[in-house]
Length: 152
Image (cartoon, rainbow, N blue to C red):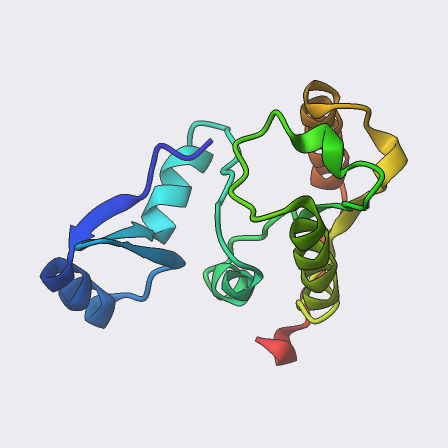
């Protein structure tokens, strides 16, 4: 669990970005929400995992910082998208969401590390999905990782 990103003004953001790049950042109105290596290390020091709301493009930044993500791809299809209605998703339509998920699946093939996939029939609802994700994280934690250094 991440304690929260740093919230910076535009000026603070520009200054800090020159010193050390952010793992991930998102502009929100007049401020920037920034995730740094220090944010992640603070959570890891407590023996916890970080759940990052970030794009796949930040995977290389994580790896360059010797932070090895556990990526769990939840496969979404027409059959199981309705099970996600309880979640606070901001999507125009379920069809668009399924298309977006399929596009992300193609992006996964280009990342320089392993990821795991949860098939549509491996969970029955949002509560079950959370448990299945936690179990998969525990499984993935036990594995030896490899990183394609030349792709960083």
